[in-house]
Image (cartoon, rainbow, N blue to C red; front, side, top):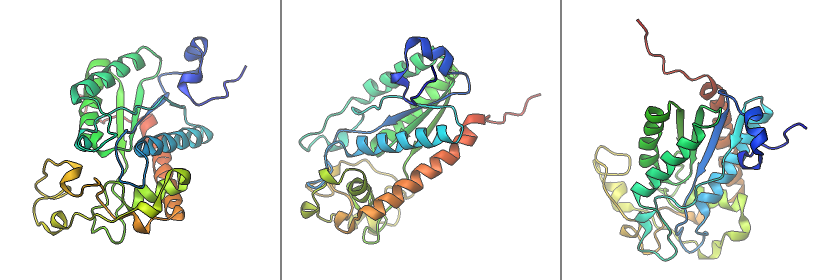
Length: 257
């Protein structure tokens, strides 16, 4: 019988060898369980990561790519929100070893390419390190994509958590979980006014979400709209589907003697 799923975990053991090859791309969504202000659910990053990854896998397969969706990682590195109720996180060392263990399992399949699609900024640095570890230890081709910051018009470039973009995307994906009547602006003005120190400036800094506001929000969700969320979602998926062409054939290009 033909395989009618793009989800790795829905395959049988008998189907793995037939479905996967060294050209297969496995997608691992990474999200988080953490506060997103009074207006969004704890699972915001997980919902977005799963939705984007699922759409990339579906559209990728429809476009002829050999791509498979792994179950998402929800418990990740969220301790920057630890002071707020509801946060659930793994220690950096635990998450790192979890990713390495997953990579070891992937290496036992015919697939050789693993793409992390991340929707939680707190995971980024650790996953990049882990991706190199998997490359070294298991000879996997590893790739990492984390959604670029998409600040809204009132966020001074700092809509990085529960702000305009995330709230818009959730209004598109899961409006039943969004409480716009509770949305409040919390723009990190002091950081925006700094010349050298900032999230994307010359000097980075360690931070907790409660450094900026009691709610942990870093941005302005009040102008969020579902049509904006749909546009942002489709742009993200389209970009990643387009990237599959290069991921499928990627070679670092080392000059050989």
